[in-house]
Image (cartoon, rainbow over the protein chains, first blue to last red):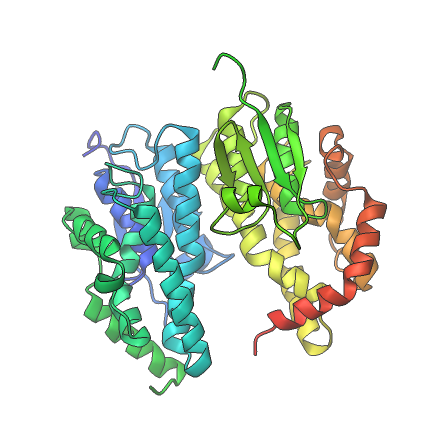
Length: 226
Length: 229
């Protein structure tokens, strides 16, 4: 734990949000105590959330010393900057390596969740297109990972934190897309297992079956009949 | 390093994203070579160095390639001496990153669609982008630039609304930003494009106007294809 002082960190959270989980994993890895406050997202959003994130009205939001930081990857960078003594560092020191890590975290952000949502929401041609894009994305990530233990090499870092919570959603994507991550992207599957051995990841990730149930609930909300 | 590694930008004339990379280098006083792409016929150089997105800009620094314009700005800030492009305070850095992402994630598409579609859809996008402009207007309260006294990441990220907006308004006939509604944004735009270092890497306005006028039909077709089905 860092110095035992009260850091006053609060995370506006939602149990299944992979974006909130990125923040919780980073904080847990660094031993930074943080109070997680579950938000009501499917009904009326709470006043604290609306006040803290007036622009997007989304989780996660990190509250620190009375100030709000929004957007999960921005929060990850904030944690690095605000707590420079907290180990492990998730971003490397070298600027080029940092740019490389940011690029891949940004790539994950632009692809997985959005494509995955189309995969379960749409049918017919829409779903087929999403399936093709998802396979292309996973192929690209598999290639980038290559034979490394983690995306940056030997150490668990920024890109791993960005992607690992989304692996809970892979089962649902497999079910809707009719493919197998283990068969088609074995390195990615092995990487996910390796990350899952970490206490923070094991504790924080949602079980894949629970994600599938949640998607079932969302479908009901949207009036989608399978 | 015994001698500084060569710096090059693979860019495109009309692109505000390409400008961002150049702006960062010029503000830092870093000399570079500009390699202009014909985006209809992408070069081997571009495709080799940005295989994932195949887009400009790409920063080449020695044997390194950095892609994504906002990441290039951060890289340039970290590697080269000169005025800081991001604030030092962690919370302010987070705010700078937040607003620069806001510009890309929330503003680009509605802006484009407000310019080049018509009818009810156009009205909807116009309302949406104006709401975003109101947020940006509020951010400029009491400040010369989004970055404070000097140009920073958010100003560079917002460059499209400084230089390209007026050209788009002229070509499309859609006026989004007036002195009445967004006085700070208008004043900021003039400040940004007047900066000596920025001006040196902005495309000539008359030429940009000519290019965009010629591409109007294409922009409208592109926008139409971007509408939700």
